[in-house]
Every structure is written in structure tokens, then in C-alpha cells.
Image (cartoon, rainbow, N blue to C red; front, side, top):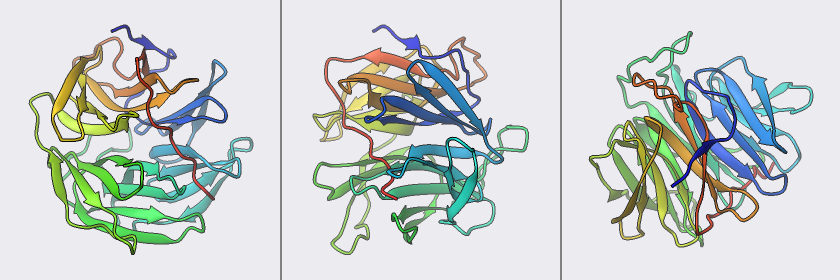
Length: 287
């Protein structure tokens, strides 16, 4: 397979790729570098933020959400002004990590103990203080899970009855039924530890297979709906962090990555690869 870096930018911790279909733009973040990035029409724009940022998601009203350490904010893309939307997780010392919107445009946000120092250095995760929260367009916050280590992957099936969600501390991807009242059923350990690294972020293709980035595994796993590994996609980066389907036909897979001690030339780049099948689209925040 042929990969290429979409820009010269290299992130300390690239994450949270989002493809915006209406504008044909790619959004992502450099968590440790406190940067929100957008590639649109071949032009890269970087918003430098005051705190670590884990997601950058456009909104229906034309601005964007950024999930910062102190809360979820609206970012005016022109003035760069920040306005607090909500504090989903009141736990001191936590920060946002995984975040995606469901088909209703509600933000789902997984949080964890902050593991990034003031200079971007790694800090140990010593407690399972994270949670999973759903944030409606009116900023109402609904807690869903608690006691999480390192939340990663948020994907839904077509009818919205199931959510796939991972905890990298467990090295496991789970599946939860979404109940009639919006709460989650019991955890189903859908895909457990694998020899090729730990589970990070994921994307879903139109066949319902999950493409999971493997931290320290230098690969993606394409995982079948029954939990079997359909294929291993080798990558020219040490620490892939997440992926998203984009491009005009949603058949370009964009892969974020992080720096690593191996110091591969492409570590921290956003990679692109053309596939023979499309993926499912991202959803903007409804607010």
C-alpha cells in the first residue's frame, strides 16, 4: 500500500481526525502541542490554544468545538475567540481524550487522568478517574460511564443501537447496547488484547468493519463485526493514534500519529491511503 503525508506538519501527539463532508476539510489536533489543525483546499491552518486539546469538531452553526483540559469550548474560526459550552467532567486533574459526535449530532466525550506535562512531556496514568459523557446541542451533559483508564474509539452501528468504545488501559474494545433511556447496557468485551500494540482510535467502513489504530504497533487492524482480525495494515509510523474516512468518495483513509522514541521520519504525520471501499461519514455537532 502507498502512503503519503498530507502536510509537512509533525505533531507530538496527533489525534482526533474528523472529515467534514460539506467543506471537504480534514480537522485534527496536536494534543501535547495545544494545536487545532484544519486542511482545506490544500491549505493548512493552525489554531494555537491555551490548553491541551483532544478534539476539533465543526458545528452546524459554523464554528467548532474544541475539547480542552478545562472543558468543552466553542471556537470562532475567524476571531479565534473561545466560549465555554460546558464542563462535562468536573474531576480535578482529568482531561478530555476521545470525542466524536453520533448521528444525532451529540458529542460523546471520554476523559482520563491528565498524562501530559506543561512542556508536553509524558506523565504516568496512576488512577482510573476517567468517564464517558454525552453532550446535547443545548449543552446538557449526561454521564454514561465512570472508572475509565484511557478512553479511545467511539463508533456506532447504523441504527444507533450499539456503541463501540475502547479503554487502552484494558487493551480492549467494548460494545455497549444503548438503552431506550439513553444509558448504556453492560459492557461486552468485543475485541481483547492483541500482539500488535494497544487499541487507540478507530474508523468504520461501510461493511461495518472497524479500522483500529494500534499504538506502538505500527499498524491498523481491520476487525470484522464478529471480532475476528480480517487484515493487518502495516504503517510507516511507530504510533498511529486514530483514523477517519474522507475524500470526495469517503475512500481515503487519513491516519494520525504521534512522535515516538524510534524517531521514524513520518512519526507525528497525518498519513493518507486510498482504499477500494468507502467508510462512514463523520457528524458535526448539532449545536
